[in-house]
Image (cartoon, rainbow, N blue to C red; front, top):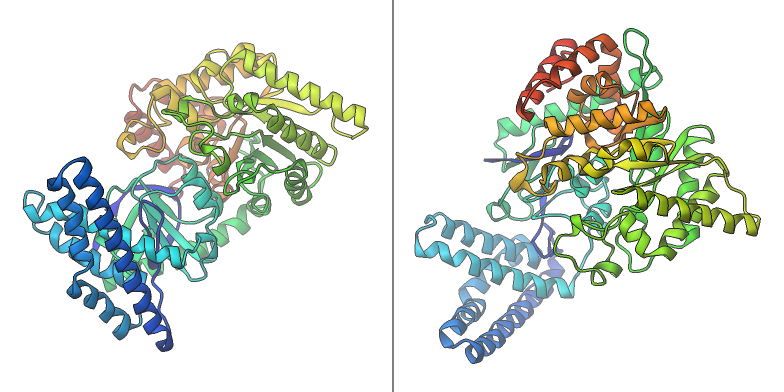
Length: 584
């Protein structure tokens, strides 16, 4: 048994066979074949070995010519191993005797060799062959997958997905019916992939560091999304303990949902807090209702673009928004965020169009939309049309300057005029908001507040940009903290600016979903929180267990502390004292 520790990003416990994606996205399924298909698998294997060997010989000739034979010899060695009868027979035996698919048999044999080589230690010359084995495995799997390429969306057996990383579009393809959980070597707590895992309610751990070489597809693993653990080949005692814990969590969650769903989110001294839901996909609006949300505070719309080669039409936008209105009802507020494309969320048809060295500081969100006016106006038309059917609000993301906000509002006014001329109804009093996600917006909050009806503080990006720590980079995970005093001062500044202008202010980042921050946010003056649906019950429990006096006293003390660690420890201690059964 091996235990790997990472960053928990979506709670829950998942137990099942590993489905490994290599860094280039090649699937390694644990799949058995019928006896009548065994010879076909052997034929597929031999064809893939031959093709991989040809590739290696071709690379050898090219490198011989360009760099010299001493470098070409690396690929010659690859070809020799790929043509080795012993290696082939070892793989064939797994296919013939255990009826494994060719991909899984290759992965098992090569990963065993990698493990043996790694055991010599980093200084031993044998350890240097590990990279060669990885290349060889990838080459064989590439040729096998060309003949039997499958997408994660077509997965029809329960598994736990393990990968170096998952793109947002890959995560969007995960079907919770079959994908019980996932774990990745890279990533951070608030990467878009992590957020989508929470939206899909799939237990997930990211930022574990290298682990893919320590197991093969089909190995039994446990993903503990509560404590951030990946357990490989659990022993019987550990397996039994986690199976019992998973059953208890499911039962407890069901009980908590039913008890709290219809109760108001009121503090003990009668202050009502508005709890809204964050959603990625239209079907999640039902989760908001089931968890007791009174509306949608953040409707991310990037899902319409991810995993496709063409931009969605106005009708596709409109129907997606109408779906949510239909579920939530005409009176509940629905805040639709305009496209936050860019950074880690470029759709395939636009990746090559805008290559960037530092996409998080580049053409993303409103910057991207203001460069693509047809795309932007298409979405604005759909939002305005949908506003005729419900309490729809529009919100612009990643606004960094007053000019950007005014440009967005000007385009919205132009679209309103177009709809007027066409006789298409819309809500003429549509509320307009802006997200506060970068320090410049927080600093200019007084000026921005005069231009909009509401603020929504996106703490995921605000933390990233304030601390210059990439939220998806596990190497700087220790720096990335919503509890950092610099971040808290900016949030306080934004809340005060909103109050001076008498506009609503909300927090919609992952900070609002973490129960250790609930007391702090209430004490800082927040009366609206927008949360991933599955976290609503636990946040509501904290709210109903404390008084506003408790919260204000907690915030006052927390804002005097000097480090993120001190703030986190203090908030955890206060939450445990006031709501003892809410934290693990």
